[in-house]
Amino acid sequence: MRIKRLMGFLYIDFKEWLAYKYELFFWLLNTLVGAFTYAFLGTYITVYRKDIMLRYGSFLPFLLVGMAYNYIIYASLSAPRMAINPWNLTWRLLIPARVYEIIIGSVLFRYIIGVLQFLMYFGVAIAFGARFNINLVSTLVAIILGVAVMWGLGMISAGVQVITKRWDPVTWFLTMLGGLFSGVWFPYQLLPKSLQCISMILPQTYILDMLRRAMLKAEPLTGLIDSLIPLTISAAVTLSIGYYMYLKSIEYAKKHGTVGEY
Amino acid sequence: MYAVETYELCKAFEKTPIKKRLIAALTLRKAPSEKVIALNKVSFKVRKGEIFGFLGPNGAGKTTTVKILTTILIPDSGEARVLGFDVVRESLEVRRRIGVLPEDSQRGFGWRLTAFENLYFYATAYLVPDPKRRVREVLELVGLEKEHWNKWFQRLSQGMKQKVAIARALIPDPEVVFLDEPTKGLDILFVAKFREMVRDRFGDKSRAVFLSTHDMRLVEETCDRVALINKGRIIAVKPVEELKRLVPKGSRNVYVIKVNELSGSKLEKCTDVLKMFDLEWFRVERRRIEFQVKEESIEAANEVLKTVLSLGVLVESFGRREIDIEEIIRRLLEEEGYAD
Image 1 (cartoon, rainbow over the protein chains, first blue to last red):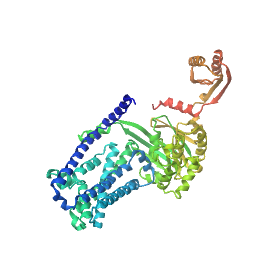
Image 2: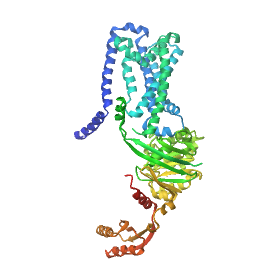
Image 3: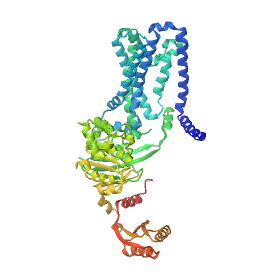
Image 4: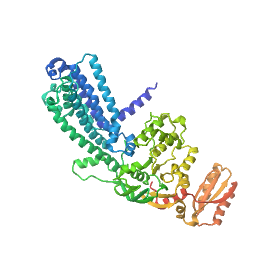
């Protein structure tokens, strides 16, 4: 094996990595935020603040609901972007279908996979002795509203990416910050007060809070009003803005001749 | 009603990078603007059932026109209609009625799906009744052997992939089919069959075929009319025979000297000698010499022949043929100045 040749491979990969400056910067940030997430998880929840868990029940089902739903959140966020993959976009747009049909058609499979992963997590959780106390109506409403909000945001993100082609600030903002601030791994109430204001602007915080209370404490919709109202408003706003931005971004690409460009 | 009609179609592309435009927008300054004109008042009409060739050098505006007509690009001004439907306002109606083979024809295929599976997806997306039957029909029509139908797309040869792409264009049984460089990658044996398929309008005489290509033989043997485009402007829209008439009658003859194999030094000598004549153009190859004289006269052509013979070249025949479409187009473009 020639070291020189290996160095050549290393060189081009490194140069390419450096060439995407935004990605590089946000990769560094992701690493830092990830480190903080696990620090909070390991230190606060298991040692100091067990009391906060009372809002949701025990920690294992709390964590599993967060991780499982994260798949659906991620699928919802990334699905509209998948539909504008430059390799396929020209051909998707040549099909005599409306834009929403193209989006739904392109993302359906990812949802099925997302739901399957969600269910697998539950299977494993039950096998490990986790106990759920589910209110079915509240759970379904939480899932539907969550998907709607994230889909709206996903369309905004896709719209941005039609222009930037690679870097997508919306998904980055939601996925990276979501892990630390929205309560995927631990209750956001564990964060210092000054950081909880970030949690309050992230839709995942409300989605996860509502879902956990519906699935772990069987709270009815009337008891979930504090999450239900902001989520309903967010869903209406993000879906409208997202669809409008998606249409506009495709129009932009069609005007500038960049539909199939990477 | 025409299959395709365009009226004063204009399109320019912004050259200023988006970064600069964004900075200008954020700092509330006027964005610098530098544009490249791709189409400049392009007007032409294609009749139903017509095979229409769209020719021009690279960067002339052919693909831009095809993209506008297939609803993938929005023009800056002017109007384009396909089967009476506006390509911007009624794009859905247009897409229902057209089939497209784009220049980058391998896009949009799943490389780990078979040829059949890929086409089946498109057949269902176009809501074709009995999609499996339609896929079989188009695969047979383009001549992809059955043994390749169930191979992964990525394992097909370039020519086979192009056949599958042509089949995709035919899946919706379109009233107008747009073909951008259709013979690219096709093997020699299939090209001849393909010309026949185009002449036959893929089995439906009422189907219009819009052909953007560099393959002059395909144009000459199939097209009813051609449009010549350069630097975004239409230079001529004529039947092939009429296009020939754009070249003055006196300069439509090409003289051909068929020779015994020319060696390297003789080939060079012939080239040097012919440069001394005041010819319209000439071409020296190993087995033939072709040239056009400026003032059409057999005497002048004979002078060239005598000089070639004086070099000790063995001449097998001396004759005359009519200028072909490729030479006419090159001539017309030279008069206009090439796009690049």
